[in-house]
Length: 367
Image (cartoon, rainbow, N blue to C red; front, side, top):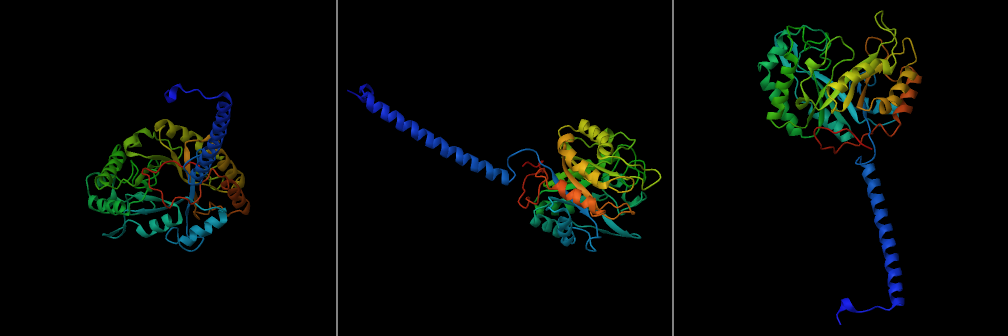
């Protein structure tokens, strides 16, 4: 009689059934516990859970006498004010600094990038095709000169160094291009319609040609300008994240009035979302004054409404800079600092957990 045809006594069969059932339950419990631990570990490492939001600041020199991240103590002091570690730090530089006819071109900021990565934060580098930080007259650095290769050697050297550094960073190239206050905007500095997109694509193509794919390209117009954005959008192939800069100027100036966070951003948010629906969005510069209303209330609205009402926004940078007496920094007044610290405490806003981030383009964070 072969094994398949042997009969097992009923009592023995029942005992074996109960033993198998008990073994199965124990095995399932063990697997479930292991899966739960795995999920818990994944969540701690940012691999699971729901949507999250990178956050940080552009930090001026008022805290330590030097801007961040050139002085990392400015980052640490801001974090103490906010009560939480940042996941982003933003800073800017033009192509060059010129004195008369002599220009010194700015190299890839290797040391600040290393400092930020060691801290667990992602660099957001504002890089402008200019030699000035204010004003619109910069004829040596027109968009046409960028398009026609005047700065190709410099751009290629910068991109090659970025590729050699090898880690992900945000590149916020020629921001607020829809305004009329920077020399890379169309309609100023001899720039003509269509040249912004052509210049953007030209610089992007150089980065790609040398393998600098660790740059995440951040397209960042200003809010609510009377210019259509579509003609300034380089296209999905050339943009990784969209972005908006916007401020509540309150009653600081004769031309300004108090606007809530929703009033400040909603219209432009919807326009950018329709233009590039597949792209995550960053607030590249955001702040409120305390002239004409409650800055603490404005901050509370911002930090509570972004996750629920503005789901495309997956990163924000507070403008922590003393600028023209507008009281942008969170520590002015004290109630604003308290509101910021309370709101940013939410687990939706990520801390400095990105010292080993490797993906490019940089993905939107998850909890």
